[in-house]
Image (cartoon, rainbow over all chains, first blue to last red):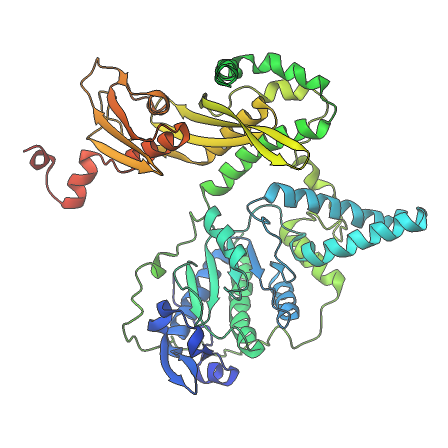
Length: 236
Length: 305
């Protein structure tokens, strides 16, 4: 893994508020190495370690993208849903920004069935056949389509299990993380002071509450993915 | 009850040979969904086995295994290359049109499940991936043993769930799957029919396969005991020509592993499933002499002194 320059500066991260953790009462003692101080009842993360992990994560992501691997970004917080969708479309990755359905990866067979249904509904909508049925059927099908669009919209281009999964909040996406662990998929996770750093393969200690901090970290990762992709396209 | 279970177990011991005949029974079943679920179970094993097999061959996350978070490593990013312009954030800039996004995704992944094809690819490309069995002809082929594992049923029990209307009966099958070369797996499955339960447990067994360390004379390297729940099992190697001397579940697990000479005793409970799992834990504790010598850094002769 070559060390590249990812434009990670400590000032930028402080501006975005990456160093804030959660309240002191809610911490996970396993995070002790990554916490530098306590200020006003909130833990403050050690930004040098964060920056180091972030650059290593970016390197890994760049290498994987340059080999043509598939990524999945998972983030279901209400505030960050739009952000995830935009970041993933920009990086041309799959994403899950509404609720993570249980068994999406471990029960991939069933998820594929749902994707097939989604595909057939979309083709029907395109050809216009959906309006030629009676009103009630049309309404039912449209509702099904909108449901599938919200839950599966981001993974409609996924043909198999992804190679790397990026998770935004570990507490929120615990089921997704557990699924990846059982399947053996490497994960990159944004860890806050109340999360367990040993679960994910790569954990980046950062603030997961503030949109600015999620935006910053996703920016770097998306940039790394884009660079990797373009080198993959150039080499193949 | 005992006669029922014994008759059922005798039925199911030959299940994998008579399954071709029993599959014809399925023609009487009304729901074709049931047969589809069997095919699903079969294909699921293959897909999941493949999915788990090589997840991270190329992706090297070994940096993060040994990182010591306590050390004070100063953050020294490499120098920015000349003319480095920070790219805009993904929020800024004009929003791409749907067509552009669709075209870009399609270049990378093909049209997959999107239902529309901007670049003119065939949108039904994913249909070949999903295995649909049509009719009954294809099912007979799927009953045969694929991937070289032999199944042996340890126990089939009838279990009940009491509901307001009465008792709901289901069958729970414990199956041991193994090639006789050192790979075994124990699985459980429950279903309303015996054969379906046996299928499910075989699928489950294939998911938890372990390797047994065998020596040249098809026995263990050393004694081991393992426990699971209240079942304790003691395993001991034996000289060639002894055969497998062990009770019920333990014997079946060892035979399917390919062990020819061993002694085993069930201390503790007699529960078949727990004893099977306890032998698995016992076997996991065993190490080959070569591994121990490597780990300790001493030649193997020292271990036999």
